[in-house]
Image (cartoon, rainbow, N blue to C red; front, side, top):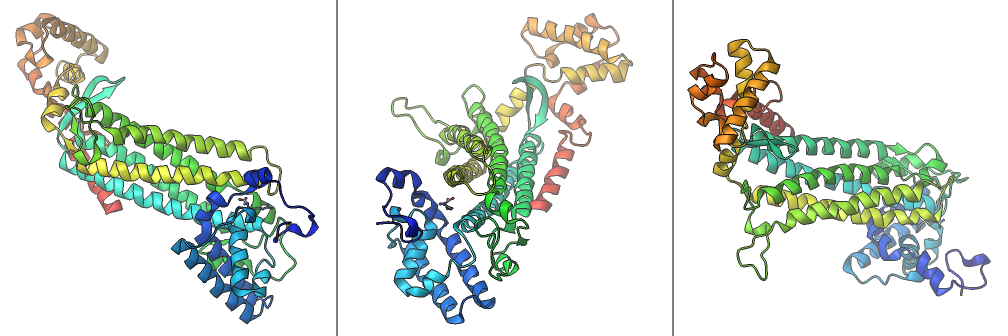
Amino acid sequence: TSNQMWGGRFAAGPDAIMEAINASIGFDQRMAAQDIAGSRAHAAMLAKAGILTDNDAEAIREGLLTVLSEIDAGTFAFSTALEDIHMNVEARLKDIIGEPAGRLHTGRSRNDQVATDFKLWVRDQLDAAESGLLALIRALLSQAEAGADWVMPGFTHLQTAQPVTWGHHMLAYVEMFGRDLTRFKDARARMNESPLGAAALAGTSFPIDRHMTAEALGFDRPAANSLDAVSDRDFALEFLAASSICAMHLSRFAEELVIWSSAQFRFVTLSDRFSTGSSIMPQKKNPDAAELIRAKVGRIFGANTALLMVMKGLPLAYSKDMQEDKEQVFDAADNLMLALAAMEGMVKDMTANRDSLEAAAGSGFSTATDLADWLVRALNMPFRDAHHVTGTLVAMAEERGCDLPDLTLEDMQSVHSAITADVFGVLGVHNSVASRMSYGGTAPTRVREQAARWREIVG
Ligand code: ARG
């Protein structure tokens, strides 16, 4: 038998394989609440515009709440033959209230319906990403505030570069996640236009009020072009793009946590709550959460690419290809929220090993730049010459197997006679970081200022 929703011109029902490739109910049932909210707004508008009687609209709106409660209770029987969430809900509404259910689809199409449902769903995810980011930023800030003056090595090429403060390193991630926050906010502001009432592609001849449904659903305004409204998936792509950048940040931090928690580094100790053991090696405590964050972000990048590929060849307006948007976004959203929560948990619980950080901060000739800067300041040496003199001293220390502060004044003077004992004042890591007072620099004073600024913003 042909489809009860669109089968008028069909003599036969679909092949089982057709049904399998066509149906989206297996995944789009996640938009049930959004679908019902959209339909309730549409029904109220149809009554206000005199297109439906108040009685029919009331029956529809009440019946839809019953459907929603069945779905929430898990008693709703989803049907693959009914393809998607839109037709499953409407068919069940007909079971419950009878004839008026058939009047709900006046002046709309599944094309504007699905765009509306999906936008509402993505909008919630933008909000969820924002709260996940805020929680993570607060956790990082607490680490930064506690360790504003703890020293650690700063790296370039993963080689010791210059000492930095723990707080400064934590705040670097606060800046990254802060930019992510603004990306999700920007995307939300741009996407908040209602597709509902664009109908199939051209608008409708019924005197509908799209401003009314837009307002009821929390949109800023109706989308201004009906063709664009039903064929636009920019909102999903912006969510995936912003998610990808955020996920990349999460992955870089996860990578640092994997390195830092190793026996060779010992910069941090992850809590038992966010680590796992080995079934054979009793000593092991593995940073699995960090590793899984690093791995899962690949799915988010994949979703971003997959949806771009789906969209890039589509002529206006709706094509069924667009049904492939949802699983990608659902999976990316689930994994982003999980990764944000796992990272927040790890950061909250982790202990920075202040002594290991400080010991590492001083090794690897990390204050060589401070020595060169001192030669410039104290002896008025051109920086290039100072660089060369310092390099000679580094080579000497390396040969002796000691660090720069371990060289004697005589050692120093054998390379450049004008060096005085004052030089030892700049070779300590605490002096080094304290001297980096330029705006945005690693000096504890600067770190505390930036931490305070962020506290103001995120509370
Ligand atoms: N299940 C469809 C989707 O996810 C709903 C829209 C179907 N519209 C249509 N004209 N076949 O995109």
